[in-house]
Structures are given as C-alpha cells and as structure tokens.
Image (cartoon, rainbow, N blue to C red):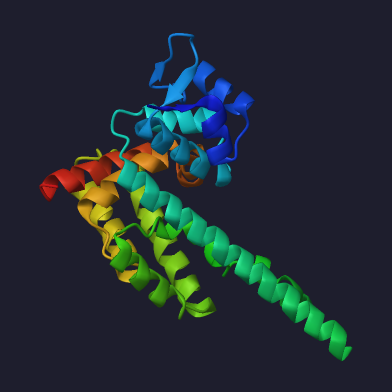
Length: 253
C-alpha cells in the first residue's frame, strides 16, 4: 500500500498543495491511485520527493529541478554527492560569516576599530565558497568526503588563492583552445579536461572519471555553473562538458 497525499505531506513537511503542484507539472507523479481517485505514493516517489526537497533547499527553481531529474542520464548517487558538496560549501560560507560576526563582536567589546580590510575580508577573493566554480564539486564516497573535509579544514587564504589561480589558468587554457578552433574530442582539449579532473583530485578527493563525467553534465544542466564558465568564453561550459566526456571515454570509464 502506498501513502496518501496527506500522509506524504505530513511525513515530508510539505503542503498538500505543493504535492498537487508537483504532480501537475510532472515533477512528482503518484505511483498509482485508489479506486476513488486518491493519489498513492510508493517508495520510489518518496525517494524522488527527497531529491526535489534537497534541490529546493539549495535554491534550485522547480523548472531547473525538473530539467535535471528528467535527464535520461540522471543518476541518484551522483545527485546526492553533488548536493552534499553544495551543502558543505553553504555550511563553510555560513561558518565564515559567523567567524566574521564574532570578530566584529570582539572588536566592539574591546572598544577597538577593525580595519576596512578586516571588516570585509570574509567577502573578499579568498572566500572558499566563491571558488565553487573553479575547484568544482568534491564528489566521492564517504571516505572521500571525510578526506576532503580533512584537507580543506587546513586550507587558509594562501591555499584558496592557489586553487583559484590554478582554476582560472585552466579555464583560460580551455577558452584559448576553443578560440583556436580545437574540438572537444581533440587531444588538446581532452588533456585539459584531464588536468581539470586532476585539479579536483589534488585539492579535494580522488575524482574518478565517472564522477567527473557527472560534473560535466552539471555544468551545463545548472545555469549558475554555465554562466560562470560562459563569462570566460561563451559556450565554454558545453565545451568543457564534451571534453570531460571525451576524456572519460579515453579512460574507458
């Protein structure tokens, strides 16, 4: 027996109206209906609802969520890994802001004045959350995530600046390859895609070719990532995605 819409609403903490809307737009349809026409949701639908709520919590609009989840290549594990990464980035950003507030409070309590640089340092170029598009997602299994958390906990301004510089240099090299008429499957582009994968592995965790392939898809599926790359060179997000796929194919993954 499945769960009724009211039972699912209570279980997930969403409104019945929201569930009806998800059904109407084809985002979350009940597995079956009773003879009286009442919606019934099974385990697969509950799992899909969990995905919708994760994406919503991360600020994804419903249209984008539907686009991602309707993709034939949508993979639950990859989606969960990506969501965990984004939540880690969000948590890191909040922790940085809390530290900035604490510093301001301490300065006020001591009666001292913070420098302009100290007041706004947390919003500056070294902020790890701003490097999300350069260093990409730290996807991996539980052990990899623990390793990623252990590594990044030791990073300071110098390390984040180096990560940013490497990311920008790699993006520029990809943009130059595009401008030179290089195809995504050409050796030059594929080698750059491999450098991109190694960049993630070096600074965060072992990024496998399969995970890297999923990242490439996300750069195109999520307009926020697309805009970041396309600001460097129009069409760069799609170019990088194809190069990543070609690199994974070359590795036989």
